[in-house]
Amino acid sequence: MLTPTTSNSQQQALLVALAGVLGAHGLLTDANDCARFTTGARYGQGSTLAVLRPDTHEQIVDCVRLCAEAGQALVLQGANTGLVAASTPDATGRFVVLSLERLKKHIEIDPINRSVTVDAGVTLQELNDALEPQGLFFPIDLGANPSIGGMIAANTGGARLIKYGDVRQNLLGLRAVLMQPAGEVLDLQSALRKNNTGPDLKQLFIGSSGAYGIITRAVLQVHRIPKQTATALVVPRDQAAVLELLSILERDCSEFLTAFEGVSGAALQAVLKHIPSISNPFAPEPLPNYCVLLELASTADPQVTGIDLESVLMRCLENLFGDVVENAVVGRGKDLWRIRHAISEALRHEGKMIAFDISMPRSSFVAFRDEGLALMAEKYPWIKVMDFGHWADGGCHFNMVWPQGEGIPQFDNQVVQAIRTEIYDLVVHRYHGSFSAEHGVGPYNLDFYQRYTSTAAQVLAGKMQSMLDPQRLLGLTWFGPVQ
Image (cartoon, rainbow, N blue to C red; front, side, top):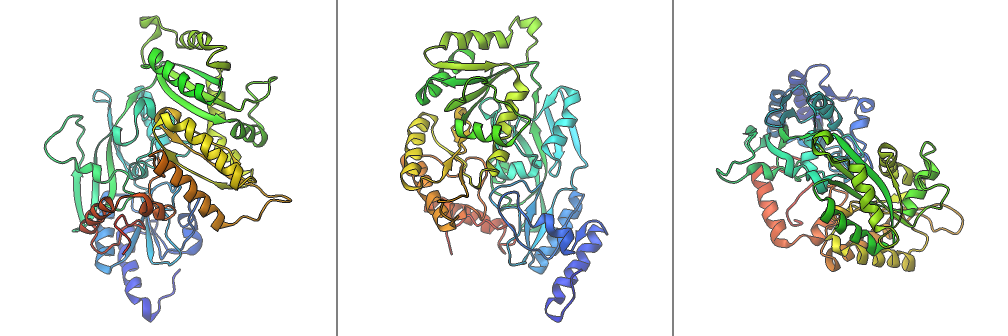
């Protein structure tokens, strides 16, 4: 436990008050107990005075009031799966972690309205487990298992965005606790799809990295679970043929197309090398330089429609063989998706990962990829580019690995920062893209937010943040210009 001293008597008084609100299991101060809350999924290692673990909305309101009165800074945390260090405290120890992992008592499903009202601490898997008996699911497909509140704060997208959209497109309403006035509740828990009665205030909280308020509950639009799917891993003629294939599928199968995921040969090779349970889907043929994982899905009953999606997909690909498509593996959907979801884990075994989460108009993908690969080969030839991503929605994980070995330079953070700047400059300035397609903004990429976001946008975002949190107590991300 913390040892009281004369200089931290106010902090000790705050902890006593918080313990009175949260009870024995709701407040952690021991360093070992707090360790998992101070370490990020990829980046971020800090320290904290305490971890608050409320299990009711009312406890959150009381905690916010107490911390605001004491001038105590808070960092919000859901499932702690974020990749930009926005959900972990920094090394100063000035932050208290407000964890919502226990806020998961409420899941209210309305199957007729196709909506669900859910506590912010409920995880994506827990939500889908509850929805499945109703034949419903929340279709944001991710490699991690985040909390619903965290998904809103980052506006997550995932592999099936082309069909279902991101969190923003599936959020009907929410409830949030404000820092100004401290503990005030903003209740926007509407389950309406049409409601034009003024500004849509819930939009303030989507993608805000938790900087504008504490989301405690959400109302989500959910979808019917598909009755049939068809999956293929396709080898295109070349990079240009990837976009040709996408255009043809959208023309001929648009209502069925749910995913279109690019996978480089280097990323595929890493999966086969480091994940023994996954075998080469193209064996005995060699691995391709590039392939595309695509999926068709339908919620309609095939006995009613007479449509067999696998036959549809086979006919479409057969018409393209020898021109747009060189090879394809059709079927084995679970096995093919395992390859896609195993990429991030496999790359970690290759060396020190340099991750990118970028987006651009998809018509620019081929030119960007050619220029990005050429830049890396010329200036940083020891770096392995092992990219993959969501071609259909313009997203790309242009990930790289800095390997170890004889003749390879020692890992250097300054070199990595130079690489990031060059790639991001290419993405933002030449190809009019984004340096953060899905992961949001946090301490890890805040410098790039300030580099690429217009001054006018930063000023407006900062004014809103100052209005909602005048003491700057909530989170590590400041959206205004550098002060």
